[in-house]
Length: 200
Image (tube, rainbow, N blue to C red; front, side, top):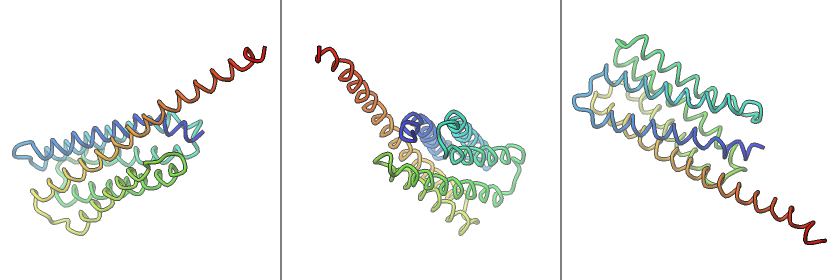
């Protein structure tokens, strides 16, 4: 069932959220962040988030008809990371547009996943907000591609931290539901097992 798959996949959102928060804080707190170091940070962040999403999609491909959504998100993130690694000397403008495009696509896919989950869990709004934050960030990047380096770092850091916190909150929500679901199923099985004994 999709509900079981969503609950089992809480760790995907947790890892994505954790990686995003670490990336955002590093980008904000590292002294004298250069464009090259920002490229390296973004490449690591996008690659790890992409691998996590692909792993979750592949793991659930036989049980979830919507497994292609996290797979597509993961491939887009990995692709953005590969571009950053292969061409580390990209101009600032091109690099900013790569980050913006990655955020836009990721935001749309997160919202699509949240719509699929709305009948399964309460709390899908956190994934919607994460997607909206990504889309807003991506739109700002495309609207103001010439923003200064300091403004860019602040934008990226705020975007990463906000989306990371929302994804972590969603992950803990799913984890709590998964644990309570296991307890409920265990109680139901115990009751069924004890019913024939009571009849005798």
